[in-house]
Length: 113
Image (cartoon, rainbow, N blue to C red; front, top):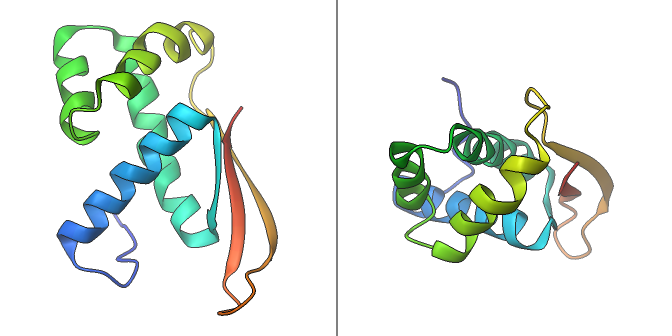
């Protein structure tokens, strides 16, 4: 699986992606750089797929990735999974925004459909 390194080491990247995933799940949408949004989309879709499976091992995998955040996991399994029960993937949408002031990075909004 090809992935982006995002200019940070492995532990920082994993933690950053887990935190961004939690924020998307809890808040419904976030504003971040375009590259990070494209990368975090994979993980949000995977967490919702775990929620649709609904078994114990899926719950444990979601808890492990989301750093034992029970609020986010509860929302995945109780609210988001039933909402997307008939949908086969594509749970997120990325909308491109302008450049960020300061470092001129391309920004985007990632949100749940």
